[in-house]
Length: 325
Image (tube, rainbow, N blue to C red; front, side, top):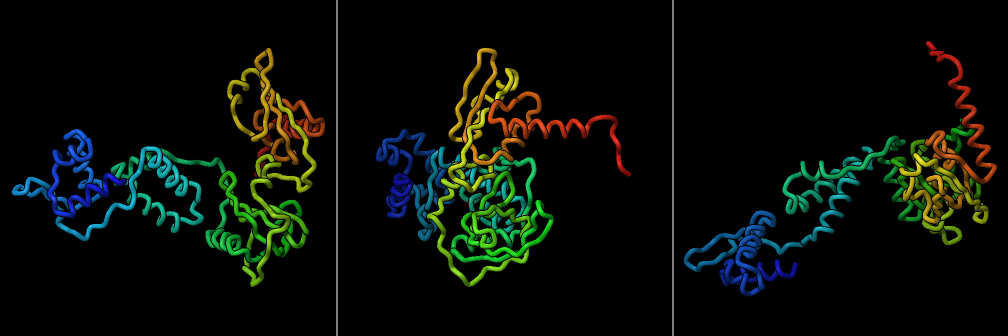
């Protein structure tokens, strides 16, 4: 960036630099200097004109500002990832705001990449399914998290098929697999709870400030979880071991399910993966996803849970399909 600024100050001082002078001053080849001049004109929109009488370049508009950004290849890649991630992961929930941000990023990217089609087609993010939440709810919940303001809302619990009024200290807003969740202290339950924003309505931000209990840290909170499920008993951790058959092991090897996982390759090509969890629900769903290619080795409780669920599935498919009219 300092080279660009120096080149522009040289031009602004009306020294009428040209490719030969710039190459000598900065240690470039003449060809490189000429290319950089063209970049200043085409990519940075510098109002440069060549003065044949002075054999150099000058600004037609001296008020043109210095460049505020110059990207390395790595920074450009990161910016493209951020731009496309924002556009794809929002799921339309905060579409206007995301679009505004994306357009601002596009102005920077267009200087280096050249066209929006290339940016859109280079990278994308997709989730298989998600639970959309109203944009207004997401924005208000995030605002309450940042300002540490207590909130109140009506929440639908699928487990009890009922609606309840909850008063919550909002700690953290999470997008998990495309669905928005609030992690916060529920005053009704007297403990931390996870709320799916899709099931939340009649949200109010109360005029009540709060202080997070127990020095809450989101990273420590999820340290003991598998996916989004977590047992609030912080000391109740159980090692889970699952075994992939030789065929599936080729696909599973190297995949990260938990940051503390350990892998063990067996002589027949099978793969055992062990990791600590405090809740079995999402582990069971992950295991069932692989069908007969994976087996729970331990603990016995999880093994029995998977067995019973598999038996229920078999019963569903026993006999002929009965389509209801």
